[in-house]
Length: 331
Image (cartoon, rainbow, N blue to C red; front, side, top):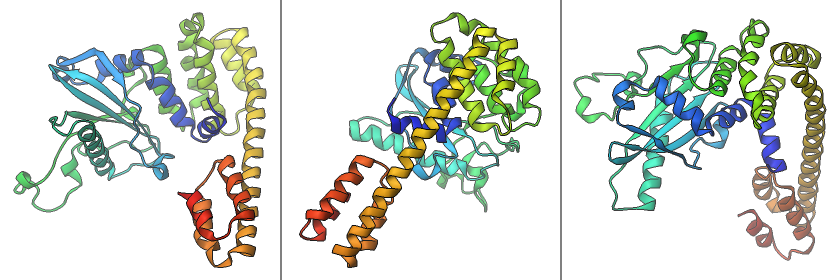
């Protein structure tokens, strides 16, 4: 994992836990087997399931949504399962519109790869854990339209999304692999005042994972999530809970991880300070050499988070004969 990815994950703890869990095909198969309608499960070849690398959530919405796309055999045809994870604390009425936009992007990607191919079926799944329950009647796209929808049904694109609102499931109804259950229970209770009461039971589910090589990796993912999302909880308290739920070995692991997170926080701070300094140097250089282009250049500069690129632009300003050389580096 690069430093840039590491910092991104620190800023998006929900995304980190979601991707870590649903990048494991065993977790995905278990989830789909338990929660898809039986008539869909019967035609799905779970062993053919594979992850695609494409994400369709816009950068400005990444704080609120994560997604995963899986290719799978549906009877004798190739299809897709698209999972959109909503990790906002409030209900998003127009998420159906976002799902439709992402489905169209998936189809356009398929056409780009093979213009003569028929469009595959895309099964949209919505996983959410907001504080407010999702209205049960709002699973169809047409539910957000007004007017005589039924009479004009032939002219309206419509689909239903498979909704998994974790607030509606009891703890016993949350099924799947151990890590999938742990992740969904954490998502369910992360904003609940009773989280600390629930946490020992959730962590204890991970006992069998500790026997595997990946056990500590999963535990680190869970602990990073807790440290990044829960305010006012001490390292000692988490250590006590983990030690009781698992063992002293895992409890002591907390202290090592806490130090690691502190160092990563310092790295993040240094990187942000360096970027701020480079952007200020670029703005000063442009104002001295090409004052009429400062606004145009800085509009592009403020979207760049790569220090190497910023360094190149800063150095280029010193030798550039006209602003076109600088603008070329922004594209």
